[in-house]
Each structure stands twice: as C-alpha cells, then as structure tokens.
Length: 163
Image (spheres, rainbow, N blue to C red):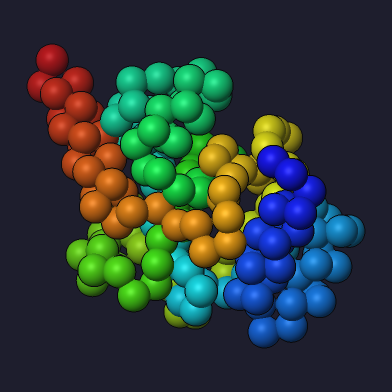
C-alpha cells in the first residue's frame, strides 16, 4: 500500500479520537491506540472459534484471505486471555447495531467502548494487528457480510456439536 494512502488512512482513524494527536502518539510509542467507538465506526467482536468455523481455516494466512473475501473491509486481530478475537469495523449507524448490540458471543461495540487499533503497518503478530487493513479512508465492513459470517460460523459450530 502506498505511503500516501497509509497516511490518509491513519489520519481518518485518528479522527475517531477526540484528540487525534494522542492517537498518533500512541501509535508511535506503543503501536496501538485506544480509539472510542460509536463515532466514525463501531466494531463487532467475533470469537476466533466462530470465525475459524465460518471460514474453514485456522492458519493465519488462509484466515486473512478468507476474511478479506468474505467481509470486504478492515478486521483487527487481538489475542485475549480467552483466545483469538477478531474485530470487524462497521458503520456505527448500520442496521446490524440493533441486531447485535445484545448478542453475547458476537456483540456490536459502540458508544462507551474503546478499541485497541493497531498502527496501519502492523499486519502480523505479536500483539494486536490488522488481519485485513483498511484500503482507504472510510473503508468499513459490510454489515450484511458480518451477519452472514456470524450465521455461517454458528451453523458450522452447531453441526460439529451434533456430530
């Protein structure tokens, strides 16, 4: 990705923070900035098990390719104490918000929540990184695609439980 595009994407992401300079400083010093959700974008928290079941892979390279083809937008990976977790960035005003706000295993995170967003060039572990980085400023996942991935993952996990 050209440096100019990375700069534009970084500026767009920084605008999610009430003090964009602070976000840029956090990326510079820590590689991850805490950005408030519910303004420029929200995030759907997807457990690794659900994503892996939906895409049919557990290898990072295959997962990244499958997620990119499925969600058409940016996805962050974080390894929490509960295991791999993915965050699909979506439009805060999207209809998926109401459907997923109270979803226990794949909730939509918005106002009142902060997300660790990696520097645009962090694209592999260790730490928090972009599985699929934004391709331009304003680039977000399609809500219908996120719902579809969740449904496919749940279906596959239910099939495995029945087997």
